[in-house]
Image 1: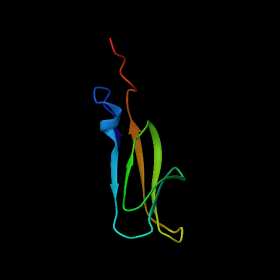
Image 2 (image 1 turned 45 degrees about the vertical axis):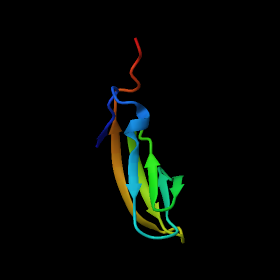
Image 3 (image 1 turned 90 degrees about the vertical axis):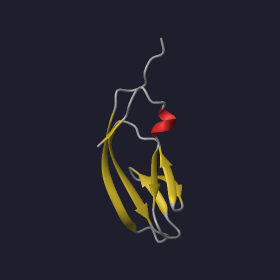
Image 4 (image 1 turned 180 degrees about the vertical axis):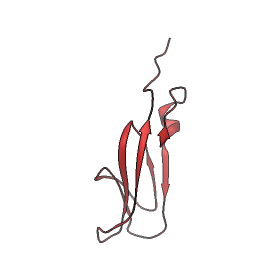
Length: 76
């Protein structure tokens, strides 16, 4: 479970993903996120599947995450 904090700017809540290997691709909910050994994902509320895919399109690892948060804090 990932909890978003409305007091922290969204850009500072990016989740950093890293892996070893070549020809890697990251996907979130089946959609491409990034290519390479590292990726940054801006989480949003809901349940998500993060996948690490090799150059042949085979899923090498995956994790299910639930993101909880209060949304964007209104400025006064």
